[in-house]
Image (cartoon, rainbow, N blue to C red; front, side, top):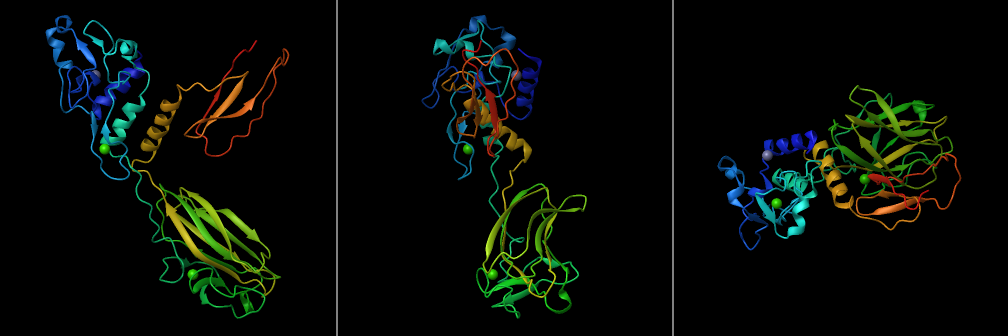
Amino acid sequence: MSAVGSMVHEIGHAIGMNHEQKRADAQQVYNGHGPHLIMHWDNIDANWKSQYLPDTKSYIGSTNQGADDPFSGYAPYDYSSIMHYPSGDAYDTDPPANENLMGNRKHLTSGDIEQILDVYQCVELPTWTAPASCDFEDFCYWTNQGEIAWTAQSGPTPSSNTGPNAAASGVWYTYVEASGSNNPAKTAIYESPALDASASYTLTFAYHMLGSRMGSLSVEVGDTHGNFLPMWQKTGDQGNAWHTASVSIHAAVAIRFVGVTGSGWSSDIAIDDIQMVSRKLCNDFVCQDLRMRMSWEKHSNETPSTGTGPSYAHDGNQWVEIWHVNGDLGDVWLEADIPIAAGFSFLRFDAAGLK
Ligand SMILES: [Ca+2]
Ligand SMILES: [Ca+2]
Ligand SMILES: [Zn+2]
């Protein structure tokens, strides 16, 4: 037994987990399941008997609490649970081959994690879009902050060969008029309502930047210190079309569209269809960490086909081979440079037949 594993076990108790061998189906048939242990009561000290008696309040699964419920139904008996007592003369397992699974004090199993996620209902909250989204058809919570203003518009802008002829969607959009004293290099800032800095968002929007004197459009992200940093930028004529862009937003208290007019009136900048989608985990990092660990537990025992020195990355569902060397490379250290695509959560090196 390891000290760390024992601490994890005790923390398991603190958050409501019972000893696995106290499940109602551990030593008797219960709702068609079990028994999983064959008890030898004569070998158990009277003071310890209570640790082996069934407790119907022990977790054995749950009903379905809705579409995002982390687990429903019968939870299989988990001999490897960090909450299971080790093997000894108190019981034998049924089947006997599971004897050596017991007494794990190294890590939470996927069954342990599923139990925690289920009893705490660690579900992803539903996606929400208001009030940061804005299609300019209704009231927008965004505000003008710059030296010149973003202005709601339908149809074309007053100047020809700059600005869109119509909205990207619906009737209305907003734009920076570059005529008159609004050029050169005048700044129009459009700022979002306050965001939840603990959430992550995907921002998508449509932009239109037609004009021979076109300036620039940026998306800036405001951090918790009040600094705005550019995350996305386009400069110069982008043709007579609406384009769409997508920006990942993390730890932001607000975001801004910053339009800067160009060197002449032919630099109207327009935006439409601002969509802010948030996906926030209930307990943030705790839930996220547990989900990652569960994915790891479920796949760490898989043995992929091995050649000589393949390496794998894990995308949450399977191991994908990303690098491979073969044969005798000589008695030297060689350097490897392996690009890892986004979306992989684990990396591992396997070696077979190395000499
Ligand atoms: Ca459930
Ligand atoms: Ca619109
Ligand atoms: Zn215990």
